[in-house]
Image (tube, rainbow, N blue to C red):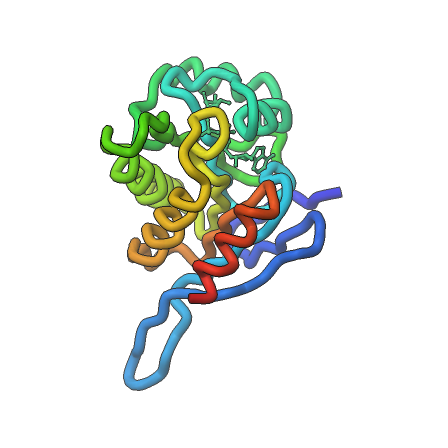
Length: 201
Ligand code: APR
């Protein structure tokens, strides 16, 4: 049974074993190196995580969908349908926030990834924007930890390895001091392998 997240305290990852802590961005203060943000990967169901915010791979009309979107709506309960209907729309590459309702996470950041069209329609830039805007939206409501699914790599057809490269590069290069922890959640072995390799490199 997952415990509800308490604001302002370190969060524990729960669920199946397989968590690896692979890296973080660092800064140097008077010669002492400080870990500013830990980036890690974890394999499993994102809806089980006790973090401040989990990210939903949403559609523009913020309706209940399949894949991770379906799992998040199922876990959060009907209040999420109402909250999303009240917001009504999110542009591709942007992010909006709702409470987590029945989920262990306090917040859900809904971001709309690009639909893969062959790679020449700005898909990479839009995906990068999803990761960056989601982090910004999360800290705007006070989150210090955030977990991402592999946005766009399911129904939207983005090639998973290319998406993993963008996810890791964007999270590493986005400097948000208020964020302590970013978890890249993999739902399958190949994606978990990409994240492990990219975070180790
Ligand atoms: N936990 C973590 N990851 C998950 C989970 C889960 N419970 N369920 C699925 N995934 C993974 C998939 O394996 C995939 O790698 O999430 C990734 C994203 O897949 P989708 O959920 O299909 O999201 P996306 O490709 O961005 O398509 C979004 O699908 O469900 C609709 O409403 C949604 O229209 C939107 C579209």
